[in-house]
Image (tube, rainbow, N blue to C red; front, side):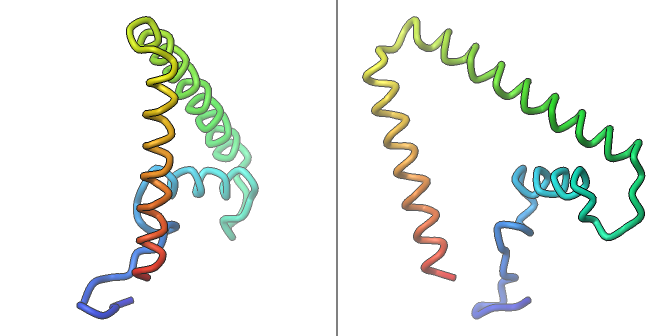
Amino acid sequence: MPQGRGRERRTPATNGTLATNGTLVYDACRGRTGVAVNWQVMGSAFLGAAFALVCSSFIGVVLVGVVGRFVPDRFMKFVAAVVFLGFGAWTLTQAIRG
């Protein structure tokens, strides 16, 4: 839907990000797609989502373990806080802009 300067308005659910793919998998697993339920497809989507969660958790644990050897905990916590606040500020400015 056009908005203001001729740009298409992109909501968080339609911006083509990883979150959108996660929402689609969630909807498929819950049977919210509005089509006939194919249990084989739903099983594959669920197993794929579960595998992705396990892999991302594993990568996070390994990455923190490796980085933790060289970087002090206090510095990692500070960087995590700054990144968290940065994402919050960015989200807030996007919400205000519309």
